[in-house]
Image (cartoon, rainbow, N blue to C red; front, top):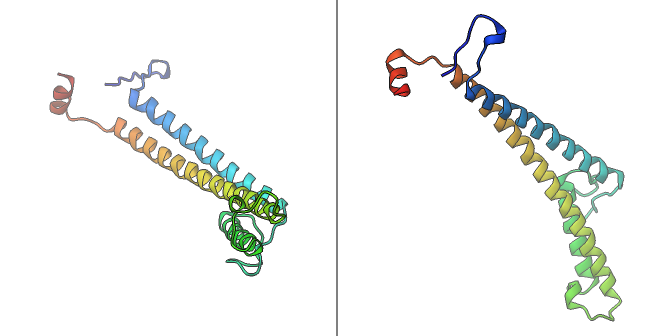
Amino acid sequence: MSSTTGSKAGVVRSPMSWISIVMMIAGAVLMVSGAATYATVSNTLAAERITVSEDGCLGGSEVAGPFTAYCEAMVIESHALEATGGKTYAELDREDPLRNVAMNGSFLRASLFTSVVAFGVSAMAVGLGLLFVLLGVAVRALGRTSVPDDARQLIES
C-alpha cells in the first residue's frame, strides 16, 4: 500500500493514483480532440455552402452536421437514380453518357457519408473521453479509501 510522510518530498503515491491521473489525462485528450474534429468537419462542410434539397429530409437546411449530410446524401442518391432510370454506375454501359451522372452522385454520397462517419467517431471520442475521466475519478477515490486493519492483514498476506 502507499505510504506518506509529512514532507512533500517524501510522498509516495500508490499505483492507483498514477493510473487515475493517466486515465483522466487520456480522457481529457480524447474529449478535446473529438470536439476539435467535430468542429473541423462541421466548419469544412459549412464552407462548401451546400443546402439540403427541398425534397429531402431537413430540406433547405445548410449541410454542416451529420443529419443534414445524411439527408443530402439520400437526396443525391434518389436524384442520380432518377436521372439514370434506376441504374447504378456499375449497371450502366461504359459508353452511356449517364454513367458520369451516376459516378458523380456516387462520389458525392461517399464524401458526405465520410463526414457522417467522422462526426460519429468524434462524438464517440468525446464520450469515451468522458468515460475515462469518470473512471479516473472513481479509481482515484478507491485509492484513497481507508481499509480496516483486519482487511489490510488479509490483503497483505
